[in-house]
Length: 271
Image (cartoon, rainbow, N blue to C red; front, top):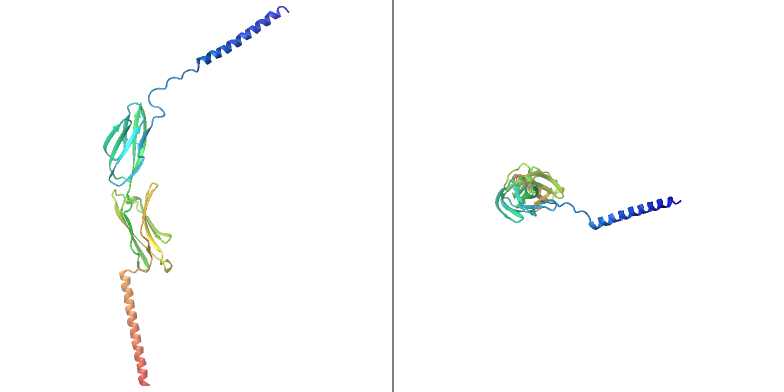
């Protein structure tokens, strides 16, 4: 029994020393605080941005446009502009560059601004849309010829013609629609659409309208003519035929009436 007690005492002292050393080590590490992270490398970061203003602009054909490309690079940046449009003047300052684009005629152009900061390049894109809404949409009065109504719609000073759709409506229904994709000119132009259709008496008194609409990748610009009521309109040839028919009918009626009158007079003289 005497030899067991000193051994137990030694084991208790060793366990107490181990616990105290562990707690002390934790306290020392807490006092030292967390280890510092390595310093971030100099240059760009996730906050580096490039912006172009305006991002979307619509102008008349032949106009000029100013685009401003800005950035927040802390180092001297290298800025460039990629476009097929003709460039004019350029002005710059801390964190921005303004570019002038001349004589814009293509209906849609993408302009890209790139900025390189500490060997990292980022960019922004602007879209320039060039169009001219129809100056006027004029529908001529319908002309009836050979049982068909002829409609003529004039669309003036519109661009780009290749994205123009002209639609003729009779009442609430579409009687004709045409897309002018075959036109590729880069200047405003006049367009005349002619269409003939048959209409019965039940169609008379309903309005006919001409609608000119530009479809520019989601941007829709349209204009409509004044409505014209569908009536019995006659061409000069039709009018001449009608007048001739009426004249012949009148001559026949006069001849028949004259013959009848003579017959009546003859019968009275015999009586």
